[in-house]
Length: 114
Length: 114
Image (tube, rainbow over all chains, first blue to last red):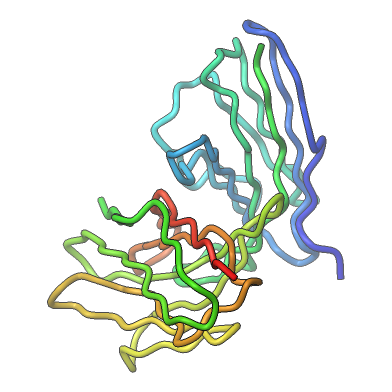
């Protein structure tokens, strides 16, 4: 069974550009989560989608947005990139999005903003 | 809102020695607690979780953690570490109930010295 897959593995952009990151959850999982992992800051919660709806959002500016498609895959869009957006972006999925569930993580997309 | 603190950013320990990685949480309501491990260039994997019941939780790879409500702690322990345990370990907390985000600590890098 395939795990959570993320693409691209690496992404290099310049300041002001837009970045699109993609995530495919484990088959049968309806919940997709996005986290930002910047050096020394641990994982910062970005967004949570379940059944196509945004269920929860972290303390990030509106230029961080996303969506979930009918097949439960998800996109994270970052507009007007800033240098401090450079980080590893991790996607995770779970079966139903209920409390206490195990999160399955992908290997991440390393975004570098120059 | 809940939060989690990992006081030690790095913990060096000799191979076959015991280790304890500390985690303290803050929440005014009932919580679920987790430990995840991240090996280099990989996503996170669940080590163990506490939802309810016995306060001593056993996980994979010989790790265990004890939930202490009075001290609001959930420390991770292993009686004898191996080189392969070298990784970053994240404590996480979420509230019970639906669509509650999982909040991660800043991580502890465990370095096992041969």
